[in-house]
Amino acid sequence: MPVTVEDLDRAVRAAFPVSHLEIEDQSSGCGSSYAILLVSEVFQGKNTLARHRLINQALKQEISQLHAFSQKSYTPKQYADLGKGASG
Image 1 (cartoon, rainbow, N blue to C red):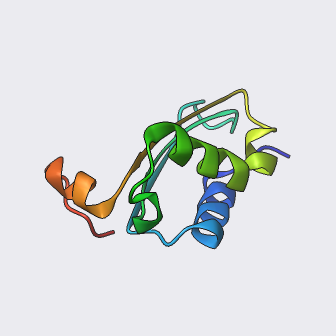
Image 2: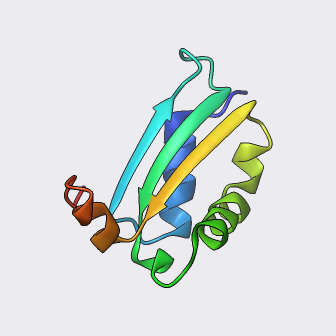
């Protein structure tokens, strides 16, 4: 059974306090390639590699079923500084 946007959403929200989350199915609906943008206060004080490791660990089961997975992670302040706001 392919991974769905809902599966990823549920797993991310179970693992992190989410300020904003975007999940994009980049596989034209077949569920084999996803990109996520996650904004969470848990990333405060962590570099990009540490953030990605946290996400990879939390989504290990889902990622193992995917062909491709990309991620962007920000603190709420970093995301607000990008001009995209911080709620959602």
